Length: 240
Image (cartoon, rainbow, N blue to C red; front, side, top):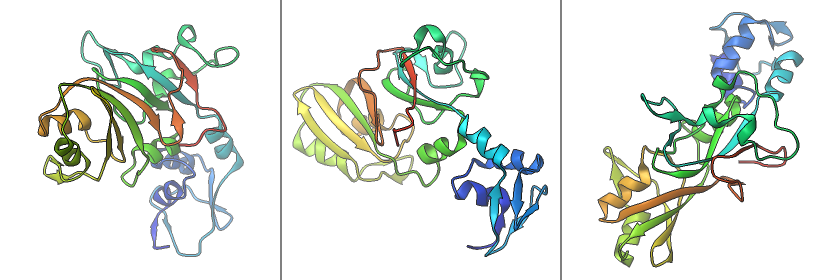
C-alpha cells in the first residue's frame, strides 16, 4: 500500500464511499492504529491499521439499494421541466417486493447508479450506499450489463462484428462487447462499460436503427418479472 488520503483508503477497501468517509472522519468514527483521526487530509502509511467504528458500520448496513423497472418517459436523474425522475417512483404504491413496503426516509438520497435514457426501459439501480455506486459506476467498474435491443430492418453479420469490436465514441475505443442476434428483429448486447447512450450510438455508427431498448441484467442481478414502473429492494442474497 502506498501513502494515500484516509478517505481514499477507506473507499478503496470497499468500506464506504469517499463522501461517506469524509463524514465519518469528521464525526470521529474512524480509527488509525487505535487512535481516532478527525483530519480530513490525514495520510495513511503502509502498515497502518484502519477501521470504521461500529456506529459507522451500522449506518452503512442501513443504506438501501432499490431495483426499479424504469418505464418509458422517465429520466434517471436531473429531470428538465415537464419530466419526472426515477426516484419519484420509489413510493409505497409502486412497491412490488415481498411483505409490506419499507419506509424509505430521505428518498432524495437514492441516487441512480448508472444511466438509462428516457427512451429506454428496464433495470435501474438507485442506492444510498456509496459502496454499491462505486462497484457499478466507479472508474474501475467492470460489471456486465445486459440489454435486449429491438431493431428495424435486417442486421448483417458484418454489422454484428463491427458492434462487437472496433468502434469508437468521443475519440475513445470501446471495450469489446458481446452482441448476438436473438431473432430477426432483436439483438442481445452485453457491455462492461456505460457510455452515454452507448448502444444507440454504436448502432448508429453501423447503420442500424434502434426501435426499443431494455436492460435486463446488471452483474448477477436480473430484472426478472418485476413489473414496469414497480420497484423492490435488493435482496441480501443478490450480488452485482
